[in-house]
Length: 111
Ligand SMILES: [Zn+2]
Image 1 (tube, rainbow, N blue to C red):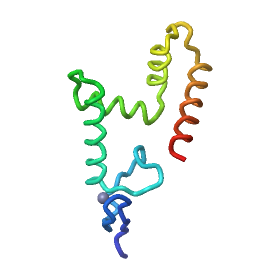
Image 2 (spheres, rainbow, N blue to C red; image 1 turned 120 degrees about the vertical axis):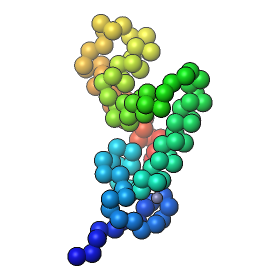
Image 3 (cartoon, rainbow, N blue to C red; image 1 turned 90 degrees about the vertical axis):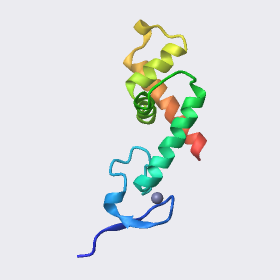
Image 4 (spheres, rainbow, N blue to C red; image 1 turned 60 degrees about the vertical axis):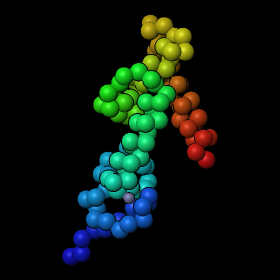
């Protein structure tokens, strides 16, 4: 049987399936190889570091980006607190509303 191969959306090279990101966190529909993914991630980290001129570790940045990508409760709560909401006033309904708002915002940005 032939090994399964996919063409990387980014560099256009045909590679074995193992060379691709198996959890599709960063690239919803497309196959992007690890080499390209690393480049994308380091570019994102550099951008993030520019914005946040604090001394933060790569690990922290990756965690933040993951929270942002997944619209985690933690991330949404921190946005709400930043917007002036009290910890006590942040209800699950509010979090859900904010999540929907962010999703709509992202949709309008990408389409
Ligand atoms: Zn690639």
